[in-house]
Length: 355
Image 1 (tube, rainbow, N blue to C red):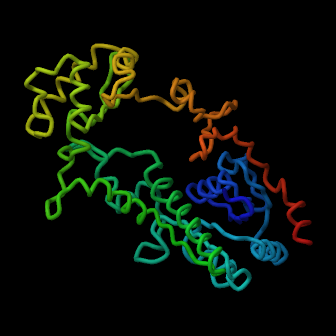
Image 2 (cartoon, rainbow, N blue to C red):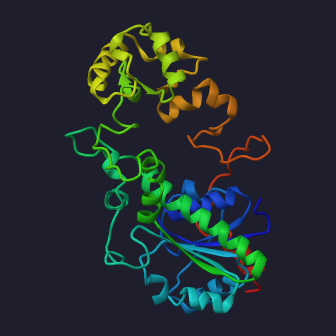
Image 3 (cartoon, one colour):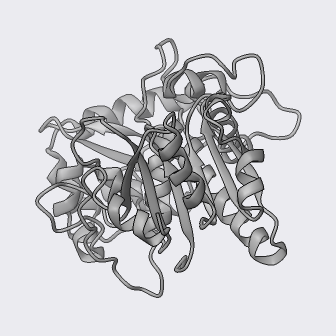
């Protein structure tokens, strides 16, 4: 889809290389500028990219990057605000080289604001953004969710969306832009779906009392084997199927699906019920139904699941890794190529630039 697009990525951590990996998997040519002299094993997030090693404080290597920017459609960097400016590669400097360049900036706090220059990590960003507030039961400290919530969901995916929008504008107008992708902004924005369930003017439900974190029909349950199942039968017709499969259709404790007063007792009943049998028992019981019940699997177990295997979601490589997403026209993506060694393409890229 992005064939003919060249993205220059300045080596960073977490969400920025993930975003660049996605763009590479969408067909862009991504050249990652690795730090010269840094010893590191090939990074899974560099799969599908080309590598050149540069020291941006060296005048000769900086000239190579300027030449590379002159051929690029986009640039991605993930430093604190001001770092690229001190290196001489501010958005203004890069747009002087390439006016149509889409300059993507990935940070936790954003390019401005009181915290912009402070250190932080995924948990801090989603905590300040309000997203971590949802990650616990009443009276318990919020759990540390995987970085999927902040680094990837609120960060990398919003950077990808911004880059794609910028590339569309550049194709139409020849004018570049700067994408300020901040995890705090993305993590706050993702909550629009949760907040849409709250009536206008009503207070936000306390933890454990909302439609998605309080009911007995929207949580995970432990099974006899130590595994878990995830239940989320929100709609009445799905809830009815769920109760039917469990033989609870006529049980008064489960009659009022949306009455919070009944949730604690119903939750306790279901917890005891699911604890009687292993996860495979429950997976088989609900298989093929619209009860909205699924096993909670590890990534390794997910690869072996019949549905995931049928879709080819996981790559058939020795290393556990997912194939590219999304897919187009029903095609299953090929196994991803191995990530390049650092500077593996340095000589070829210099030659292409005539250097």
